[in-house]
Length: 274
Image (tube, rainbow, N blue to C red):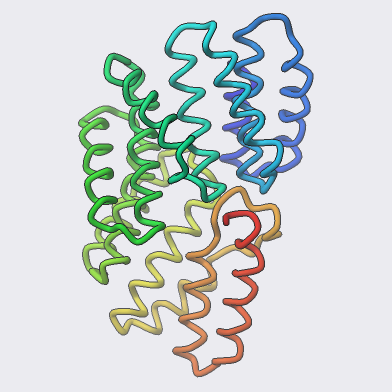
């Protein structure tokens, strides 16, 4: 499990070189005789989906599920949840094979004590529903995820949950409610080892709300705090940042800049996050 933890730490820090080194270690480990080690290695390699490796990630996810059949059910649940994340990132979360994985995972999750896996199982379904415009279905899933969290001290998951609720409220045009969730997420950041890009995604969300509620000067000030990225290598969907910058350009009367920003965002995301 050490490499899996290391991968998450490098991901949080945005350390692309460290992430690459961990993937290389997973590649070596996947030929190990130990079934559990192979399963962990394949689950780790499935995370390549975050970096646009849509050929390697699905194969790794399927291999992890296969290996997990010979292990305790906790491994199988983790392998299924990881495969569902890959399906979400590849834009095929509604395909039949993904629906079967979801059904199997929910059966396993019923008697599982791993709160984190149960949470990610439901919250990723909410993200999928939101991405295809099913806002009410997303709300149901996010509520299930919140109930699973309860009062548990899973602060990083709670940060993601605040951000998810904010995204849902923005989709509904309820910007004051979205701001409330984003403020909660922002308040959690100082005491968490959260992925470095979360601060910028939260800022972009706040900026979108500020523009929608006619607080343009505040939105302009906020835009200067968002980092610039090598967009082809970001381990997250940067769409909110592009949308915020485009809307701000419109407010500033720079329509050509807004269109250029949106086209750039399209180029960055259409292949990596289909």
